[in-house]
Image 1 (cartoon, helix red, strand yellow):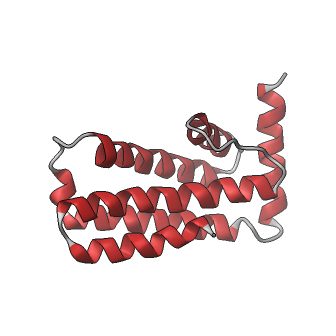
Image 2: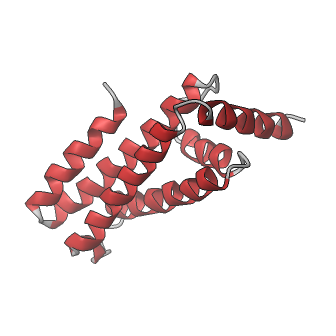
Length: 141
């Protein structure tokens, strides 16, 4: 399965408009974006385990690749992860009753996915691979 398929589920959940569905939409949106980011990194030769630390690790790699467009997207991914954590773990938060805010999260995830797809094409793919390698070399020095 392609992780970006979760975005379709997020869009369907938005249509339900109740709080559990909106919380789930935010969750699915995050995971669509996260899986697209990690899939591209793996295709470029970088290993990301399927565990909790990999969420921070993909953020760090993208945030430090030297490409401002990708670094900004890393921040968007991190913000979306914070929203995911609120949606999944903090039932006292009422902001997930707001359809527009949750819709924005899905749109944000779609933007992240679009950028990942853009950087999966040459010459940007090589530029990203080189930036990620540079960061990897730096942290392992």
